Image 1 (spheres, rainbow, N blue to C red):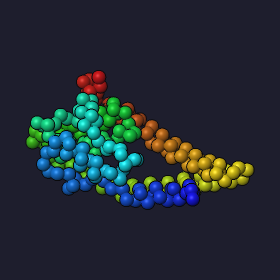
Image 2: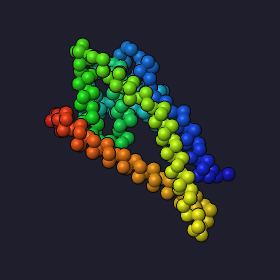
Image 3: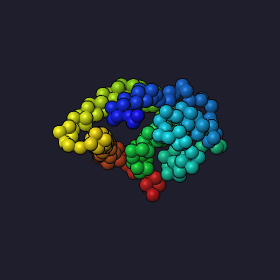
Image 4: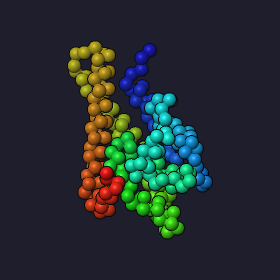
Length: 212
């Protein structure tokens, strides 16, 4: 029997509740070769895949990130813990932002990376930033789930007085729900872009090499 919209949403919410982020302590303290990096990311972010055969990270992706100045080059073909932290940030950003926007956001992070490599690391380093940002992950997921449920209930209340087949109404409710979520993402993406354009880019300037 075909599932209803409500059953699908309930299943999705259950999967969201199981999502977890990669904790700094789970990242090896030794430098890794590229194959080890891709394997680590694929194993630890498996729940975030859309399809089982999807790859979280590939060699081509890593090379492109380095080529586009999102990721510092590896040291003797090995990637440090700081590289791993940057790759995790890139993974989350790339689904929403352009390469150029990620470059602008990453400028101060890359400086932290370079300072750590030179031995100038202070209390606020890449790992400290990562821990602070992701410490709110559980709270954010709970808030997001409540908002998703609210949007779905509102979508369920649409088209109730319209004469249509039950299957058509299910589709229209699903379409309304998707539109509501999409508009939410659209607005948040616009806010992020304005923050980058009006605050981050003017504050840190543009690196000509990175912008080519």
